Length: 340
Image (cartoon, rainbow, N blue to C red; front, side, top):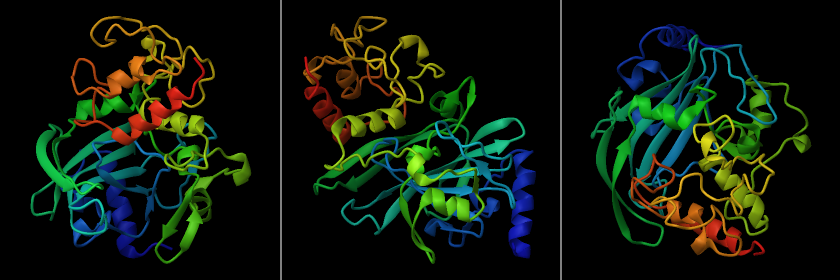
């Protein structure tokens, strides 16, 4: 049973979903005060992904809020079918020192995907310097952020909060906005729930009434951990490409005309990029022959574009201002092990 306060909050959410989003994040009632602690209110459930989209090394805290008494429908391949009124909440933050991730931090933005009567809509919220509130902001911004990296070095970048239209560029699927992360293979992992212990996320969602039609877990696919040495390199590389590139590079995505499909279901080696010539040669291809040259990552357009920060060359085109060194290292190893 929901408390009176929770029921009121749920009603407010449904009202907001049919109107303009509230100006303040706190008005949604998703977190208990103080807001910066990101402690979920009743009915707001945390979750995580096995392999996540790279966003300039930003850490992320994810939550889902479904309308009371409703659930998402399981899908073995694609994003779950969420009911109208669902909120998917993703908070981007930087710990001051990555070696102590639970220490002091700075939250920069909260991105919400809201399932409205019109479909999914992007609600971007930008946090103030005092970390007391986040405000609805469709314009986006650039702000300097610094941290101590895992290797002890200080790093600093101009972090970019995308504007509302840019959100659609990454989240477009079949001409409309769609989530990227909440699919079975990304969620099929263990998670430590406060007060409930360590449980498989999909099982927990089903137990809590958030997910219906879940088959036995042995029938559900799962991503391997990116740095798990016990998982084969092909599975790890394909999982990385799927979450970071596959939402655009797929037959239904924005990059369909490239003919390069990096989603995990692609089986055709050429469409995956192996010895595939670029659709358009030139500066972005650096006169290299193939998207992936087996045994030669240094000759592969995929690696060249991922390692670039030139706006006319870099891939992904949005969402980063630095290079994913660990991701590129994984893909270099993957390509190096391919037989020429």
